[in-house]
Image 1 (cartoon, rainbow, N blue to C red):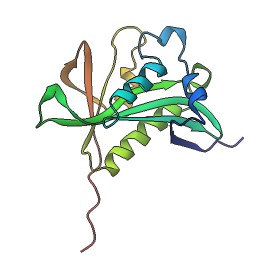
Image 2 (cartoon, one colour):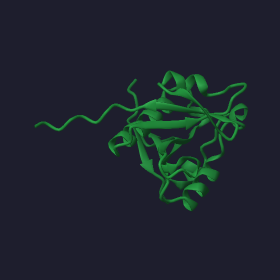
Image 3 (cartoon, helix red, strand yellow):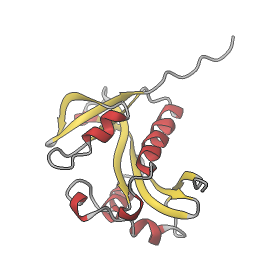
Image 4 (tube, helix red, strand yellow):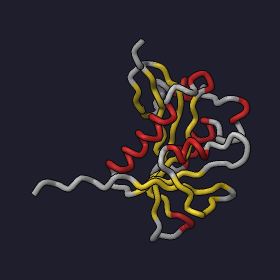
Length: 162
C-alpha cells in the first residue's frame, strides 16, 4: 500500500467545504477551536495568518494555521512566528498527518528566515504537550492566557558558498 502524497494547500473556494468539514474527535474539542473560527481569524488578521489545508492524495485530512511576525505582548522588539492551530480530522488521526503539518509549517518559517517556531497548548487531560515536545518544542516558562508557550529552534539557514 502506498502512502498518499502529503502537502499543504491554500484554502480556496474549491476546497473550502472540505476544510470546513474537518472535525476533531469529541474528546478533543476543548483543546482546539473549530476550523470555522480559525478561518474567521485568518480573515480578520490577513497579514498574520497563514491558513492551509492538509491534503493526502486528493483528500483534505486536516487544517493547520501558522501565525507570522506577531508582536508578542505588543512588544515591537519581540516578533514571533509559529503554529496557531492544528486540526486533524477524527477519521484521519494517527497516520502522521499532524507531524507532517508541524514539520511543513516549521520548514515554511525557516524558508522565511524565522529562527524559531512557537506554539501554545491546553493542559490537562489529553493535552497535546507530549506531541509537541516529541517534535522538539520545549516550554519557555511563559504563558499565553492560561496556555504554556513552547519554542523550537529551527535549523540555521545554510551559508551561501563563497
